[in-house]
Length: 150
Image (cartoon, rainbow, N blue to C red; front, side, top):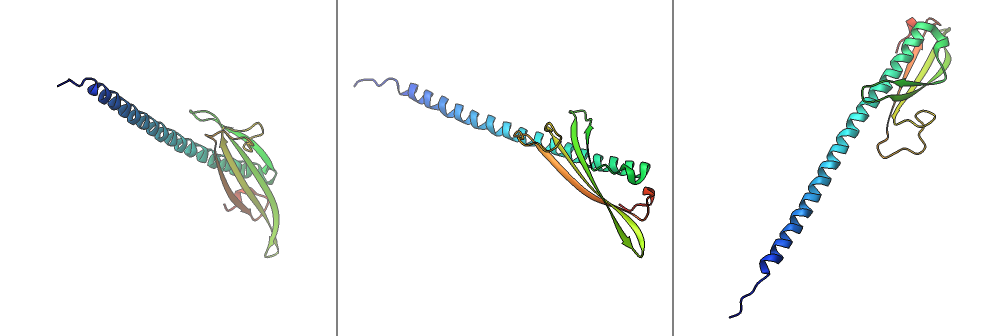
C-alpha cells in the first residue's frame, strides 16, 4: 500500500490562512472602534467650545452693552488637544412690549474642528470633521445688558 504524503501541509496552509483572516478582521474592528471613540471625544470638545463661545458673547454683552453684539466674529478656543475655531453670529432686533422698547439678541455659535480657511464654513471637510451649533436668545428690557434674561 502506497503512503500518502503532503496532506498535513495543506491543512497547515489552510489553518494559517484562516488565522490570518481572523487577525485582519480583529485589527480592522479595533481600529474602527478606536476611531469612533476619538470622534466622540472630539465631538464633546467641539460642543464645549460652542458653549464657551456663547458664554463669551454673553460676557461681552453684559460688559459693553448693546454695542458688543458683533454680527459675526471668529474665536479660537485653546484646548490641550489643539485649538477649536468657533464662529459666533449675533442678530440684534428691537421689539415693543407694553409700550416699552425691548432689545432682543439672537446668538448662534458654530464650533468646528478642523476649521476651514474662513472659519467653520468648511466647504471640503475631511472625514474626521466635527461641528456643533448652539443657538440662544437674550431679551433685554433696556440698553443695559445686565438686566437681560437669557
